[in-house]
Image (tube, rainbow, N blue to C red; front, top):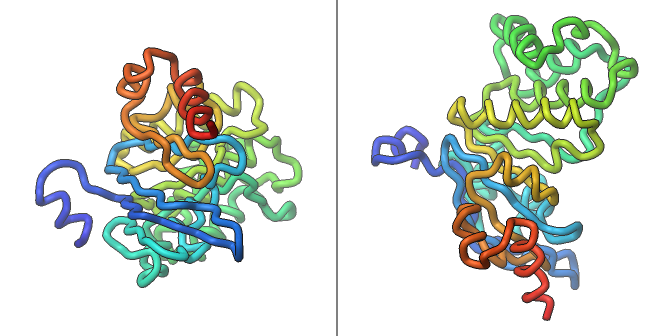
Length: 254
């Protein structure tokens, strides 16, 4: 079903739906039956310790990895049967995104736009507009090797959004950033939501999840241990989010 058809049915569109996703690497079972939905205008957090299966789940949803079993649909497209269509409607910010050091910010974003099929007649204006929105206008023609880590992350955000995707995947987007740069990135995540995009945010930072996420899924050992609105999860345990997270994970380990 297309996004338009879903919206016509009433309520926000389901833009991401994972159903019983599994991923095995030979004898290692990295993801074990992950299921969740995410809607337009929502930030959905995948919370988990390192090695929980968050990044592997994101890689399946973004067509980098093929699920061993189960499935997922992004904006109505099947990740296994329609990977090219999925790639056209998603923006991806991986945890360790790299920029070729000899390209300028403008050139890096322009190249991403060409790869995403943005028409030449609109590409230049869109590059200028998005980098200005990200407060990168003074640095637009500086080569990447001269940019700070925070500026490079803004360029990576611009590359992820240059084709105006309805779904955005962010894997630890503030990892390693200073306070000012991290705050700037969080502001743009909130802007994505206001724009009506669906945002999947992978993080292990509880404070970041509390600031940004409407709903979360707690993942450990490749499984979803709990999911729901932050207030619901905290009310269930009577604890703060960090304490709730620790209790859910530790109860499972025991």
